[in-house]
Amino acid sequence: MTNLHYCWYPGSSSLSNNAHKQFADAEAWRTKYNVDELYALFPPDEFESAKRFYPRWTGRRDRHGLPVYVYRLASLQGPLQKELGTIPPERRYQRIVTLYELMCRFVLPLCTALPHATEPTPISSVTTIIDLEEVSFPSMWNLRQHLAEASTLATANYPETLNTIAVVNSPSFFPTIWGWIKGWFDEGTRRKVHVLGKDPGQTLHALIDPAHLPKAYGGELDWKFEDEPSLDDDAKKFIGNLSMGPVIFENNTVARPKVSTLPQ
Image (cartoon, rainbow, N blue to C red; front, side, top):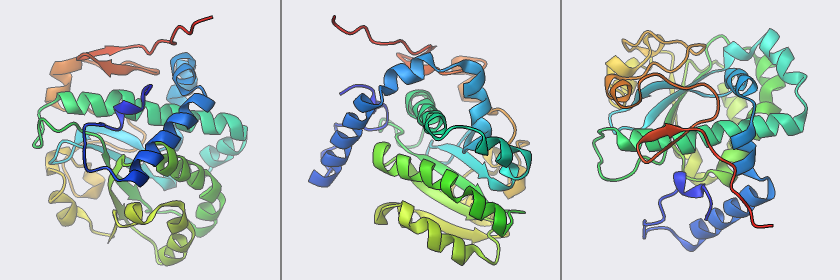
């Protein structure tokens, strides 16, 4: 094993043979794409810029201690959507990989180290809010390949990292969108998708304390998609300020990833 254990805790005896194969395939994928070196050497400025196009960590956690991510697709319309189209497909794929690595090698280990309701069970998955407010049908059509890349990559190579997906502010054409996207996920992931409509606050409160839920979704947190993570008090005490660029959380310390030294 290399760094896959950041998203999978192999002490679990409940894994099926299929799950073991999935993780073995993901490990082979990591080797093929040299993921550890990619993450360690990725330029910090480009890394920070790439966050604008993908789900972002709010800096908060749900009632079980899982990190809460938000993806507001309307923020990708206009100039950002045009910019996305200028990025070569291979580099776009690499950007997605590095952001999943941030989740698995920094966010999840940090949340595991913080107090949470399921201690000592590690935190190995996330809660994600998908916000479809003000998204037009043409924009969704134009973004479909971008969304498919990230979703397919996660399902194949970062298995079991999605715990709950709450779709909010869904438009009238959402059933058409769902017809496209449901094929990107396996059946288990599809069962984790919950469509909450235009007023999700009360439902989300059962999952996320209002103090840690952004105001746009019925909470009290002053945070929007374009913002950096707003760490809760426990996280601030533990790590202080967030570092920019690729980082890992290991041995209760924030550090830069290192390239493994390979035998000659």
